[in-house]
Amino acid sequence: MTAQSDEVDRIVEAWITQRPDLDFSPLGVLSRVDRLSRHLDRARRDAFRRSDLEPWEWDVLSALRRAGDPFQLSPKQLLQQTLVSSGTMTNRIDRLVGRRLVRREADPADGRSVLVTLTDEGRIRVDAAITRLVDAEALLLESLSRADRDRLAALLRKLSLGFDAVGA
Image (tube, rainbow, N blue to C red; front, side, top):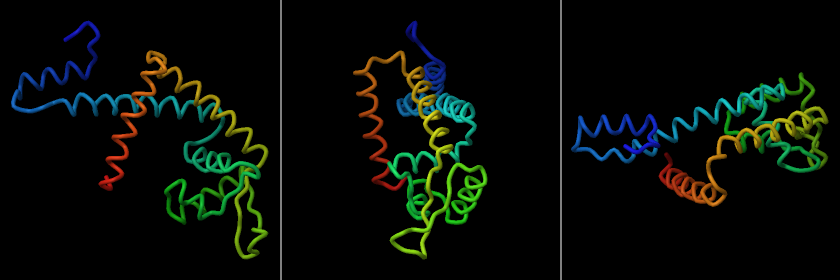
């Protein structure tokens, strides 16, 4: 092991000693992804907490914010972006309406349909959260150069697309 070994290196080395017949390179990659995921989850939860948002609230509010002015989507569009059930989305919208972070409005194109619109307070919260999130994520990646970040993003994209292709 090198002077810059991490816990995953120690685990893999121990397994190689015990089971030299196996290729542990997947463990070396995916165990690190798993560990980094935990760091990212903590950083995200902290960024959302500091903006007085729950992660599920972030999911809905950020989808509305990304939609651009007038920051509104149909419940169906929100379902597609957040990948939750219809009942769950209805409950989430109800709770966000109660917190005055979104409001329901009649769809002018179809009076029977509803649009969910981000309120000013919702936009302030989601903008604060994304600023905190970007700052926190930049700190997590500060040991990598921009070129390293770009290479890593490309490799992770390739891996992700492979999972998507097989329906994993």
